[in-house]
Every structure is written in structure tokens, then in C-alpha cells.
Length: 268
Image (cartoon, rainbow, N blue to C red; front, side, top):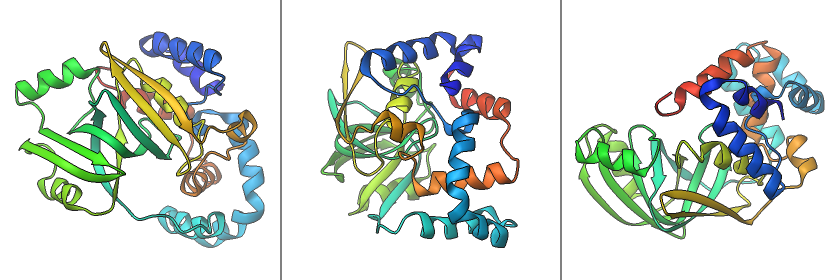
């Protein structure tokens, strides 16, 4: 896939992308990071979306948010569960953590923690060791949240300075499931992002195992066929609408997007 190849052509992400490609080949996954970096796949997707979205785009091309709102109504008639969203980052710290991907096509993916513990952080970290160092030196918050069946079960908030206090309070007091930007580690984030693009959003379950300072992943439910992945059938209605609008508005510059994704990675 072109998206992973672009990361392989960039020196600072070359080894990470090569590792992800090797993982994809061994685990029968489509090595796709984002449709924003897949020119041919994106072009085919836009053609398929045209009959449904062309008229909506003509009406609401002046406002991206409004277009996306109206496009979602057409693309997805299923009633989705209400989630409360944590706008910062979370890193799994349990030996085993079960999650559900609800939005892919970006780094990091959005997920719901079904079972397990995570740390809430202001920024992503290269690995658990770097994260723990930041906590010990008081350069990030010290917040651990445990989930059971998607709902907050317990939490330990020792320091909450960097992330918005009210936002964290809303999360830990919520009776709804929580969506968050789930970042594992620098070594594994391309693999995790790739896996998120190979499952059906809202209809999947992934087990993340942390042992010997490494993250490992198992798709328990919802793995998509190769055809569905390359045809965009694992994208959410929101992602399809975003891609359609940005493509029609000629807002997609692959180089800029690539650099933006790299910039979001820790120590890059």
C-alpha cells in the first residue's frame, strides 16, 4: 500500500514502517495506514460515494462541518451508542487490555477500552519507560483508569495538571462508554494503526498484551476481508465524509499529511 511505502521512504520512520509491513505479511493484513495517503484507493472510493454525496456537497460545500453532519445521515442509518470522548491520549498498562476500534484512518486510532487499565496522558510517549519517567518527574499527569465492560470501574487520580480537570472528571464519572485516542508505543503504533484499518468499526474486539516491554495484538472479533479494506468498507461514515469533502475541495496534499502524521509521533 502506498501509505506505508511513504513512511518507508522517510528516514526517521523507515524502520517502523518496514516492521509494520513485515507484520502485515505474516498476519494476512492489508498494510494500510490512511486513505489520505492512498491516491488510487481514495479515487475509487470517491467514485463510489459520488451518487450519494454529490448533491449534499453541492448544497453544503461552503461548510465542512455541516457537510459531514448531513453526509453521515445518508451514509449511516444505524443508531450508534453514545460515547463520552477523552480528547487527550491514553496508553494501555494492563498485561491484557480488550478494546474496540470506533474510528480508524488516522494515527492514533480512536478506541473504546472494554476491559483493562490505561494511563491518561497529555501527550503520547515512545514507550512505557518514557511515560513512567515523565510521571515521576511530574512532566505529565498521574491518572490511571480501569474499565470493565466499557465503563469506568476504578480510577486513581494523583495529579491532574496538564489535561483539563473538568474533562477528566466528566470521563471518570460517566456511565457511558469512553472513546479515546489510544497510543501504544512508537515501535508498535504503525502496527496498531494498520490493525485498526483491518477491522470493522464498532464491530470488533482486539486484545492488547503488554509483556517484556512490548505490545502485542490479537484480533478477536471483526477482522475484515482484504476486499473490504481496500474498498473503504472499514471506514466510518464520518471518515468517508471527511475524505469526500477534502478530496472535492482539493485539500489533500499527501506530503503535508505525511509530515503532519510524523509530527504527531513522539520524539520525531
